[in-house]
Each structure stands twice: as C-alpha cells, then as structure tokens.
Length: 461
Image 1: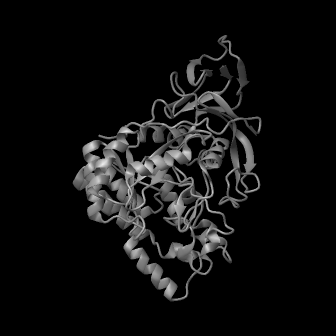
Image 2: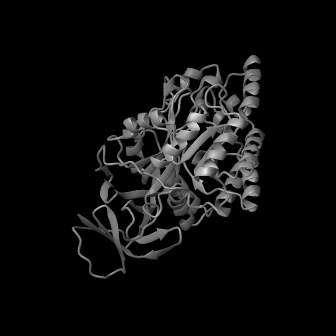
Image 3: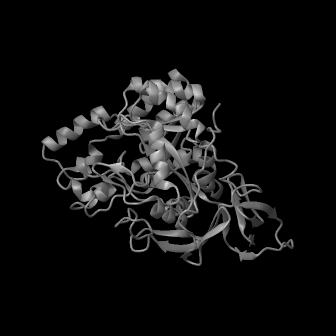
C-alpha cells in the first residue's frame, strides 16, 4: 500500500518546506517536489496543514502499580489515546520491585504490552534495588534494547535510592554508555514535612504541593548532577518542574556536562492554584513533583527555548478521581500520584507556537526529534525523511477544539485540562505507514504497535 500526502508543509526540527510525502509500506519512500507526478494507491490533500513526524512520549506509566492501586490506562487504551493525539511512540517504565531481578521485571512488562499496543513502544527500567546482581543485569537490559535506567531520590521505603546506590548505578552507566534518569526530590526531608502537616491536621490536596517545596527539587537536582560529575555518568532529569532545578541543570550544561532534562505540559500550564481548588478537586492535580506557583512557568518556557530543557513528555500516570484519587480523602499523602496527559501533549505544545513561546521547528524538536535522538530511535523515528518509519501526522494548525473528559480517549474519568480551548488539531495519523486516525475516527488495531529496541543516547560527548 502506498500513500501520497500532497500540498502540505513538511516541518522537521531543521526547518519547514513545501513537499509531498510518499509512503510505501511501513516507511517514508521520498519527499517529492510539489506538483511532480507521483502515483500512489491513496492520495491525501494536506493543503493548509502541517506534515510532521509522529510524537514520541518518552515518559508514560501504563498499568503502573502505585499505592495499592494501578494507573487506569492499559497499554491498549493508553496507546490508542496516544494515537488520537498524534503520538506514535511511547517509552514506558518497567518497575523493578525490591527483591526481584531486572530481567524478570522486563519480561513482565513485555507480557503486559506485547500484542496490546496500538502504536510502537519501548521501555526504560526503574531500578529500586541496587545490588551486585542488578548492576550486572543492566548490561543484559542494554543488550535487550533497554538502555535508560530510572532512579528515585524520593519515596523512601518504596523506590528511594541512597546516594551510595545512585553512585554505583552511575558508575555502571558510565561503563556501558547507558543513561541514568533521575526523579530528583529530597524524599527524606519531604517525608518530614508531610508528617508535620498531617500532625497539624492539614490533610487537603494543596498540602501535597506545600510539603514538596521547589527548593527540595533544586537541592536534589544539584546533588544528582554532582554525583554524575564524579562518576562521569550521563544524567537525564525527569519531569523538571521548578526554576531552582532548571538553574542547576543550566549551570551543569554550561560546563559541557552530559546533563539533560525534560518538563511536562502540566508544569507549563497548571499551577499550585489547581491543587488548591475547593473541596477535594485539587486531588485531580496531585503528581510528583507537584504543580508549582505560576511564576515558574516563564522559566520553563525559557528553558525550552535555550535547550536547557530538551524534551517535553507527559509522565502520563492516570488515576480516576472516583475510587482512586479518593483514597486520599482527608490525607493528601494517600492520594495516588499522577495525572493523565498522553493524548494532549502535541496540542498543548502547539499552543506554545500559537503564543510565540517556541517556533514550529522547536515544537517538532521537543515533541519528537530530540526524544528520538536522546533515547536511540533516530533516524528511524523523529523525522520526515526517506527511510524513516512512516510515523506521520497531518496537523491542522487552524482548527480549534476544547479539551474535555467527555471527548478524550484515555481511560480516566477527568481531564486535567478540562475546558481548555486550543488552536490546532490532529487530522490524520500514520503509524509505520498504517492510517490509524482519519476523518475523526480510529482505524488502528490492538497489536499493531511493536517493541522498539533502542540504541544509546546520541547526544553524549
């Protein structure tokens, strides 16, 4: 099956130009001068629209166990929702329980995802138990196409790693070329603040934000950077939310250190005010790190322009308001941490283009190209070019839409962006040459998505 996308504006991270895109089978076959006679089985007129590489969300949590429950989206529902939003590849996290092996964990996540995904997927590995054996297993994970390993400076008793454990894992990363991903919050200090708030009868959701101050994200980020400097390990800070943390990343990058960071749409558009909504509504916005006061948002947008923030992912970890978020009624520390977002990342980032915060090229770069390069999928993915996977999105920059739980496709009973009016909308989505979204309907199928075995970070110096 061949498809020709005519009259669109092709946007890559390196520039925009008018070209027709020829898809043959699962790959992009050619970029053709507009008007040149090319035959194809299916011809799509993309006049007035953008043709961009499919979005790559490198931070999702499908079917993730947390706090006695698990995230609401399965790999099937979550990847279907991703497709609706123009994301054609996700990288999810396999979660090692303490006392288990990394390889058995990876096998478990393959079982969850294999045959159940609508778009392509890969895995990172969460290391919660640093032992001689698990450090050795990092090499086997890399051989299996999983070469990024997440650690936590938060959640004592669950995922928390000591500085010594982090140092050992970073030494292995330096040896192998793997990337350490870090949840950087000072969990020991935070737990004290949480206990004090609860002892004083302060149990509302806003306390989640007040007991995780931005200074403790900045401190942990600085500490992680110094450990990476000592070991020579690459470091990728996940879901950066605070100006203090960004300052630490910027300073490290200015010295040429292999330090990278992502932020998320919730930190660009939502704030501590949402956590303070009346009643228990703020529980919908509980995630870690927490939403920050609005003044942090301008720093994050600036970081995206300067590339001190290289990627925007979602940290998609949805829990339904009813039954799941409500586990924390009266005790904010029991509210499952996480928000839905995999369906709306591309659209929300396009608002940055509309408002003049970023260029169209930078939009594509942070949503697709840099994630592909950072996590070893480029040039298979992240670019409209001959030979690349035909993960292609036709995007209408003039269309308008209102985000709502009534119309989204994620398996969660609320939207963190309820009522947001946005300019721009996905028109048509191809996943490896297959048309999965078109004419306002889903044409994909469960099991179409394949596991992506990833290479090493392409930005290392």
